[in-house]
Image 1: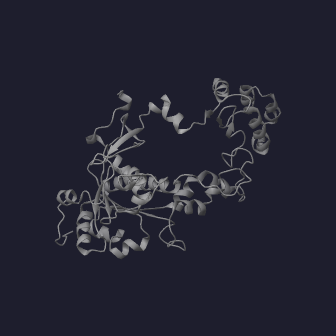
Image 2: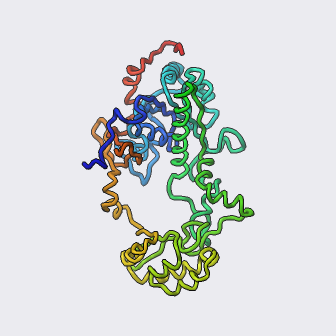
Amino acid sequence: MTERTQVLPEAELPLQGLLVLDFSQFLSGPSAALRLADMGATVIKIERPQVGELCRQLYISALQLDGDSTLFHTINRNKRSYAADLKNPQHLQKLRQLIAKADVMIANFRPQVMERLGLDAASCHAINPGLVYGSVTGYGSTGPWVDLPGQDLLAQARSGLVWLNGDAEQGPVPVGLALADILTGSHLVQGILAALLRRGRTGKGAHVEVSLLESTLDFQFEVLTTHLNDGGQLPQRAAVRNAHAYLGAPYGIYSTADGELALAMGSLHTLAQALDCPALLPFADQGGDVAWRQRDDIKRLLAQHLRQHSTDHWLARLQALDYWCAPVMTWHELLQHEGFKTLDFLQTVQRDNGVQLRTTRCPIRVDGKVLKNGRGSPHVGEHNAWVEAQFGLNDKESQA
């Protein structure tokens, strides 16, 4: 293994020694806890006895492994499971003892749920004033949408994001990923780390709040700011090969003789030269905002012209003039390419029973080394005995 792909030793992970309690479910909260685990924190997933959290049965393409969905395996690797019935007073008492020792706690139930259980931020800070409490909601903790289900597609729909994708004649097109969930989890990690830094200076804990809607709106901050300052015009998607509702030609993906080619922004003169396409020159000679005003005409011309030769043919010509472009790759092509292999981006994680999952690693490098951990996702309550012994939990009343 080269120096570039060395794994950072566990003792050098930046969050080594932190205790995180993950009360969350599905994707946003668990993805935040996963990232903290990647960086060295001990993450204990609090689940219902026997059945565990609902994501264990939330399937992608009906794919499951060792009784749980691959989605659960992916987003809960490198965690430990502690099974507790939140309606059982003895179980709650042990959880309060654990909260007294924790650095971070994450929850993504609807706002009133944790308050009814006595596990809301104020109650937990009474137990542990230094706790950084992270909560995820769909649409914030107040207002008319507070009780509505917070789900990725629904947040995309309410945020206006779906009007940026697809061509002009199409209806709203969602992003085909759990975009809102993962962005929200990322923002939660940012807030938690900032709060931990403040705690290091002041000793004071914090309540960090994020929502699916606000994170999805923040993702659109460039184009939403344009809307707020251009007289309130709505996004105008290209009719041809749209890739960004606010950018002019040639920005988009085009079919070639044998595949697909992505073109980003650049000089139309340079593009005409690289593609040997004199028909582009009249547009280029107009200067100004022609790439926006005549976006569809330029894109139609390019779509017809680029079908004449292969993707590799066009890449060679474009790259020779440093024009921003890329082939559109399938996952098969990507995973076999040396450019991907150099990243050392995959890892195998394993449960204690030997069941393995091939997955991705943390995308962060520290001191030139990648962050990997081979621990797979836990079975429900797998670590109850370990947690109770490690942190001295008992049935007696907490003194915190």
